[in-house]
Amino acid sequence: AQISDRRPAEMSGQSQRLNVVPTVTMLGVVKARLIGATRGHALLKKKSDALTVQFRAILKKIVATKESMGEAMRTSFLTLDEAIKTTNRRVNALENVVKPRLENTITYIKGELDELEREDFFRLKKIQGYKRREVERQMAAAKLFAEEQLAEDLALKRGVSIGGATNILVGGGDKDEDIIF
Image (cartoon, rainbow, N blue to C red; front, side, top):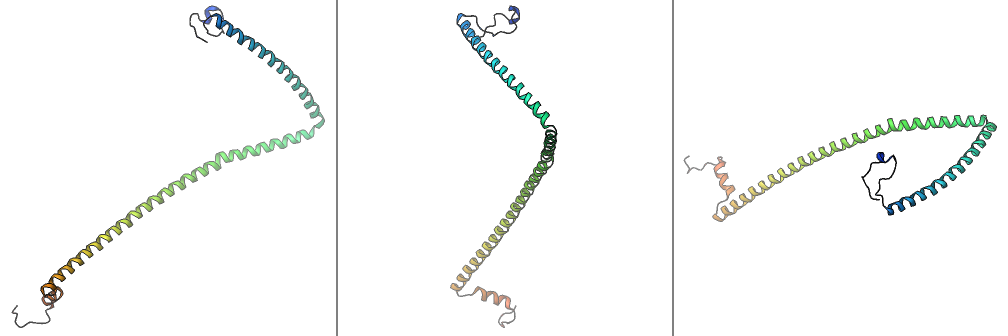
């Protein structure tokens, strides 16, 4: 449907109409829609009337049954009412007490787990730092030992023992009479 703004609905005297371009084709389309709407209205009206008749018949049966059942209906009603109240209390308890408590517990647990994870991460970093320092210390000790071994080998090739040479200088217990100082 094409829309036209030539004349507002208020000026033409019609307060409710479709805003369309007035052509022969559009007239045929709108008439077809009117026929369909009229048929649908008639069918729905018949269905509504039939349902109203059925409703009134059922209502009469309910009234007759109610009068015959009397106290049994009242008891059933009160039992049902109590069951509804109990169910509503449970729903409210779940909504206002249990769910918030569980949600708060979940938040608390997540926070604690995050804290434990941070502590483990910190502990791991401390251990890695300690291991790194220990490896560096061992590497330095190995390097020093290798240097000492190299110096010892050099000294032995020259005919002097490094250990013996230091013992002579440090020894002090055995005085050599040839040495003055």
